[in-house]
Amino acid sequence: MALNPDLGAWLRLSLLDGLGPQSLRKLLIAHGSPQDILAASARDLAVVVSSKLVAEIRDGGASDELLATVEQWLADPANHIVTFADAEYPRALLEITDPPPLLYVKGRVELLNRPGFAIVGSRNATAQGIANAEAFATTLSNARLTIVSGLALGVDAAAHRGGLAGTASTVAVVGTGLDVVYPARNRELAHHIATAGVLISEFALGTPAIASNFPRRNRLICGLSRGVLVVEAAVSSGSLITARFAAEQGRDVFAIPGSIHSPLAKGCHALIKQGAKLVESAQDVLEELGEPASRLPPEAVVDDAAEEHPLLLHVGFDPVATDTLQQRSGLTAAAINIALTDLELTGQIESLPGGRWQRIR
Image (cartoon, rainbow, N blue to C red; front, side, top):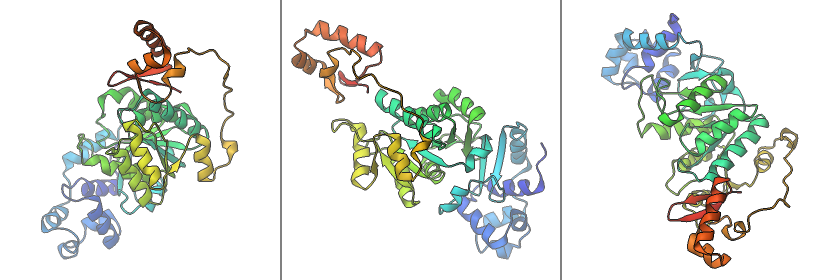
């Protein structure tokens, strides 16, 4: 597709090396539109940007070659660019202090202005954490909250899968260009989101995975959302950065508590100490957001009388070592190893580092 002049002007500015979103916003405030910026005098431009950028803007901005790359990408009808000037621009992002002037979008653009809810957490999540993230996401998606996350491994990927399984789908905010899938292990999931949900990025096409870009991505995850749920997180987790952004943006922060012995629960416990809402169910989230309970689908009936392996009583939901299980149960090591293998194969427990085991709820 041929670029229209307005979009071409946006791209000529946004693709200029060294002209960041903050400077572009200041130029827009001063001059009104990208085309007016490109037509402005050197003296007026110099009030906002460096002499080097003044010269480049006066020279017409980014090169035709860069624009041609974007034009080729836009030939796919699933691909879009949304700017401040477009009705499709996420209204929720206009509430944060540093919204990106331009977004690359792949998939269902209309999801950008649906009520969103973020679910984030550890890349190295436990099986229970992944199950929790997916279950919460599916339930909240069915309650008409579009699930927002960052396409990382672990909790993020589970949240996207859960959002896709529900009715409100999912938004993936990535820290690379949209022509780069990172991490590569989520390639199939990214393709699914591009079809049934939407991927967005503020970074130009071809931008690789750079560590400093992911905190910037995190501010958009919570910016798009009415609240943020942290499922599992260590005390140094990037999810806590997302939670901090959420609090600064006036979004609600939620956390799922865990075992006092689990390193992946310590970040959540720290958030709860700082005022995050402790949640045990999706109903807790909806009540805090002021959403009607009628949005939740009927809960499945659980048969508490169903027969379970007696060793599960000794495993519990805290991590436990094999020798401790032997002491608790009185079984031989051989019998315990056979039982643990059977329980792991049936998805009732998971193995943890250090030869420990944990029950999956």
